[in-house]
Amino acid sequence: MRDPLANIVQYNRQFTGVGRDPMWLRAKLDRLCASPFGFLRGTFHLFVSDWNAFGDDPLNPGAPQPIVGDLHLENFGAFRAEDGRIVFDVNDFDESATGSPALDLGRVATSFLLADERHGELRAVDRIEAFLVSYLEAARASDLRAIDNDKGGRAMPPAVHHVIAEAEEGSRPAWLESRVQGDGGNRRFRPSEKYFPVTDVAVRDAVQTCVREFADRVGGRPADCPSWPTVLDVAVRIAGTGSLGRFRYAVLLPGKGGKTGKELILELKEALPSSLAPGEPAAEQAARVISHQRKLQGASPAYLGTATLAGRAFTVRELQPMEAKLDAASTKGGDLDALCAACGVVLGRLHQRGGGPGLKARLDNRDRALARRVAAFALRYAEVVVEDHALLLQNRPAIENQLGLGEPI
Image 1 (cartoon, rainbow, N blue to C red):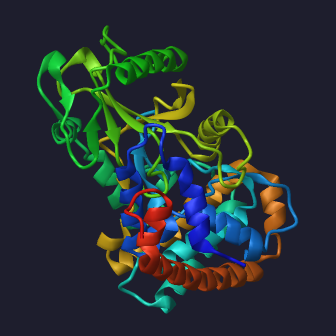
Image 2: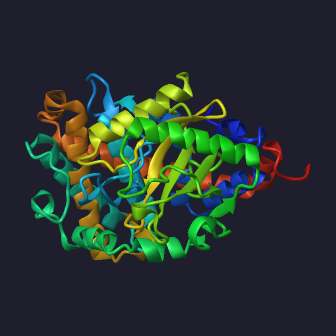
């Protein structure tokens, strides 16, 4: 008796009231309704429920291992790691938990079918096959290096090197100029559809305390910056799809030398129990997100950790001018083919970091079964997502009403 709309309402009721702006949920529904791919991105909770009901796991039996969870094509991208390299890797671990690697494979394969509306299923199936061939080779190899433009990524296609180069060319002053205004100690976020300045003094003071505690634990700091970590400004940040509804703050801090144009922006994102482990405390999930990110990525960024704000658990990361996420809509078909194969390398190394020899044992003699069953699941589940998306479009006013966002019907 599957009821996807009831599942969506039940999950998103946690994002109503208690200081949450109804605009966040309205924006989320906009993004869910925009396309089947947007729907997939924002309904990991529904995917988990469906996986438990009819997901196909060709890697069972086997012990659970750290996995990404909410994985799709646009959760791969390039960013600057703590050691200064620009690397290509998975960049979102909000729903990370322990489970079967097959869940990550089935979800990302489904995203290949839904993310590119310009080409048909045959092209997507070819991408899934190339992805799985690359995945199996990487998961069995001894090479666990981060993928960059040096030795760790020399075998990567030009499309990956382009994404890395795009991130390398990111200019902090130009990036900040589009988000921040003012001079000296009067630097403030520019109001926009993504940044809404926080004027509540109590909230700003709580954020300042939270950031000081985080900075003390992390230890690192910008060079020649005696005022670190004084908070210059705080804004509500609107981003993502599945995470819309969570408390999410952007915090402007002085950067290298305390100079204008060198500031850092930290993001505090509310941590919630993973849909893979719904009964666990949010604070445990926050710690797990950071622990799994450091374990599973080839190289992780600086300023990464957890914090507590107003009794709620948050994860903390730096927003970077050099981030470059994959964007299926603007990528040429041939480049997207190559990127999907490259994602297989990334995920194969990631799963091997999490599973070690146990993963290799699970993969023995399963090449054909894995390829056939992952592709079959993706084809079947993509149809389910398309149907669920259409159902949401037809019933959006009723959903808004049940979430307290619309007028009574």
